[in-house]
Length: 155
Image 1 (cartoon, one colour):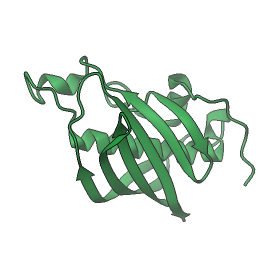
Image 2 (tube, one colour; image 1 turned 60 degrees about the vertical axis):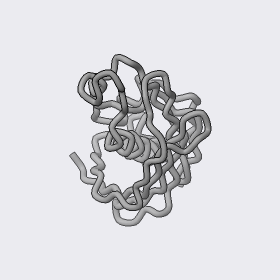
Image 3 (tube, helix red, strand yellow; image 1 turned 135 degrees about the vertical axis):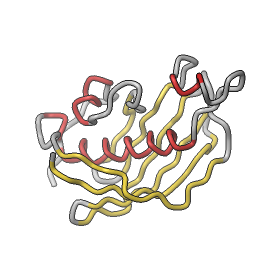
Image 4 (cartoon, helix red, strand yellow; image 1 turned 90 degrees about the vertical axis):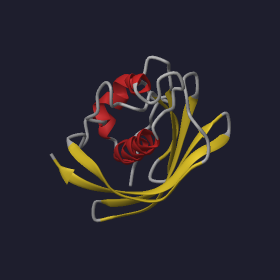
């Protein structure tokens, strides 16, 4: 497949062209590296202003593990979309849904001030179904990892 040249890093405006998510559920701020159809490195800056910290937990803010998994799933969607060239007006109207999470592990709390680095590798893509290996790191330490399966459906 011929992939268009992409200017890195990829900013939030381009990310919003590729993902349907919006505040407060858009969990990727920037893409740093992309190897089309192979891997992506993106990140989310975790700030004290995140709405989930209000109730999770008062006085001891912790990013919910399910949102770390969601951030990894969004990075997976970006890997697929950017690999296809969707940011240049390709098939950005396709939707990808998270359909399976396996081997989820949480190793450390993520809180305000952390930069959540999202590393996703595509293991295979077959008939609109993608299998991904995903890791979230803070300061080079793995805080969460899992396998994700996403399925595509045209909007």
